[in-house]
Image 1 (cartoon, rainbow, N blue to C red):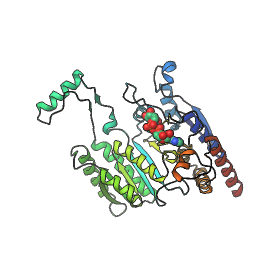
Image 2: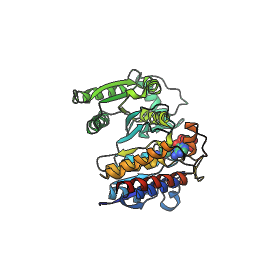
Image 3: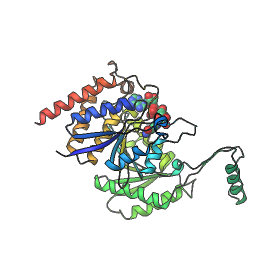
Image 4: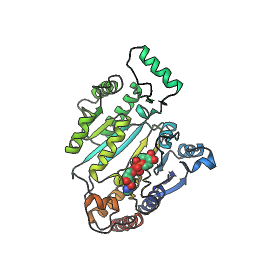
Length: 369
Ligand code: NAI
């Protein structure tokens, strides 16, 4: 059996709990993984002088594959997102988030099976921002007004939304190649091209260009983002692979997670040409951190995606099968899923849920031997 070394960034908030659960489940799947633990987040500031230490980025470069717990980004402070910095440092231009109905997990539909492909490097996430009242902001406002491009209230803060031909082609190509490789039949591009003609308009134009190359092999359509949201809530089964600029993809990921049982079960990956960092869609959930209440399924299913990436397909499939079995049994559910399903069984702790998964994995493996 092949052995792998993977960088583990446990993160903060519920990250230490969900990461520990994930490690136990991966071990129980029978793969041989050596974890190289690397820190990131506010707790690193004192020791390393940075929220994303260089040694952590280096560790991912060395191992090429990492799995990461969530990291808190305080709202409205000078603290930049570690997640955004990591994606930038490693060229992780794709955010991949498969969403499917797991029977027993409290989803509103039984037939969701779609994949979100979110552009990960630009749009309003580019971090190009001008603070309200600063000299630079005043200069930018003057520039815009002098060119007759519009008027901006003097007490505005400004965030820039760049959408490039290069990044759009890259992400749309990835969506089509993913569709081909996974036997999926359609790619839908989501945008607001009717209003933002030079950013979303460009995204749609380039998506259409790329789509021509796949004609006859993968179907293509597009949806305005507001209509997409309504379509998702009413009939999510119509979507297959869906490709988004960064911000809409972020919002749609939570919307899609909500349709199948919530953030507790939504996995994901950030993928580049050389490196891949797997992580759940959810954040650090400060409201439940440290209480053994977190649902580790999202990080565990992210680990299953990582195992597929490492060509440990049997172990990945086994983990997904065990997750499905535990949800189908319905006797060991964390609080989030208990609320989503309306079940009256007592809520399981993160540890108890992990115990159930590990037991199921051991049973499945024994059955195969
Ligand atoms: P959140 O995803 O942390 O929490 C939203 C709600 O979902 C909360 O009620 C939480 O208890 C619940 N929840 C989330 N994950 C859960 C799980 N595994 N099990 C059970 N319940 C779960 O989103 P929020 O509150 O907006 O963000 C908190 C912090 O996390 C912020 O600082 C944010 O910037 C950061 N964040 C980090 C991400 C990352 O590291 N990739 C992604 C999203 C947010």
